[in-house]
Image 1 (spheres, helix red, strand yellow):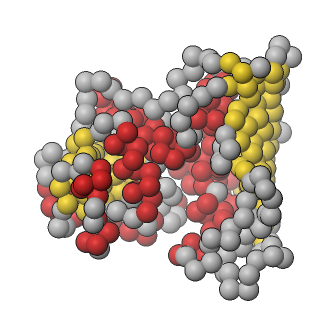
Image 2 (image 1 turned 135 degrees about the vertical axis):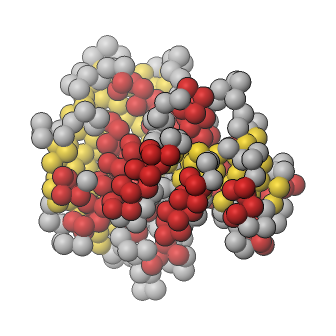
Image 3 (image 1 turned 180 degrees about the vertical axis):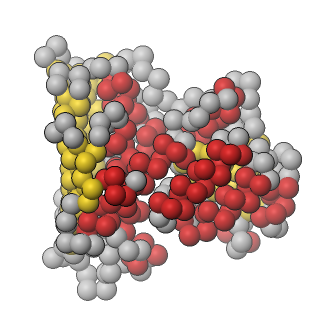
Length: 352
């Protein structure tokens, strides 16, 4: 049974507040997700800066951006820019955030926020001292199937969450030769951070005890590939609730996907977030598949910016605040630490 439910899963923006947005970085993710999302929802795109001028070619004409800045300092000095969207590599992110805070700008920073917890804690404390709003671009939270699942959990539709399962049925044949192929623990640290993030959102209120993970090269990876394509990770909570992420990165299937199951005391939510998308609620009352519109790319990116804008407008912390992101980063880094030690469980409080 397919039904439309009045769940506020789509990106939302204040009708009386359209702050100027300046974007730092003009790589593929900005062109394919950030800018299409902002253009779709009529946001105020003041300008963009990239240290490689060729990266910004055509963005003014395609997306209606007002300015191409010649330097980072010029963007940060522009009073028309209220929010800075930082879409750089992680190693560049923290110094730019410090400059943006010093310039009095609110920030939306790409994930992961930092390379380690010490850097992350320091920038969160600095942001909170400044009184400015800093959000992290955990855009997967606003992917329609995950957003609907989150709202159903918050509404008590399946009762207390007991178990979360993710399956990545994918093929990473596109990775060799890219920068991702040489990132340590790439499939955990970079690719899976959205899944670690949404899992700890669904386990909200529970005490995580341990995290473990292993990564491995699949038998069908090409010899030239460096990064492992296979991975599993387990999360265990004090009350027995648990989660598992399993990645089969060398899958050869006609129907690949990123599937999820959330088992609660009163029902189950299941779905797929990419590339096919669905979400359904299965309980004693009924089995309901939800009708919805939109996709993770680009609508998830609109969701993160919209939440930051509402937080500024209402003078509160955004749901995707830098502080809220700390636990997701800690989960991810704990899994990397475990994988580096042959799957030995890592105490979560040792990392966070």
